[in-house]
Length: 45
Image (cartoon, rainbow, N blue to C red; front, side):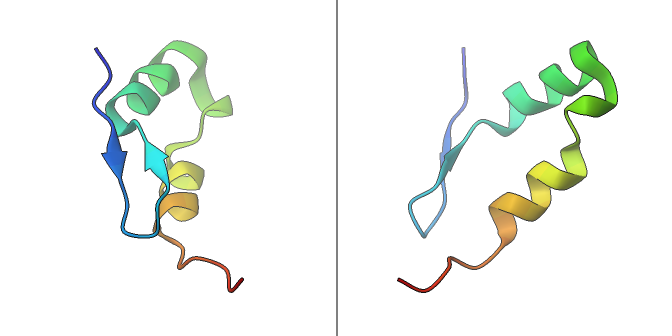
């Protein structure tokens, strides 16, 4: 069961699912990259 988080700027993510993918797939599913992408301020439109 995914636990989905919607960030203030509208991006939706599944942090628990990402952690499980990291355990299953190894370094290719970088948690650091995931964190950086979802904590950046939104780009101006």
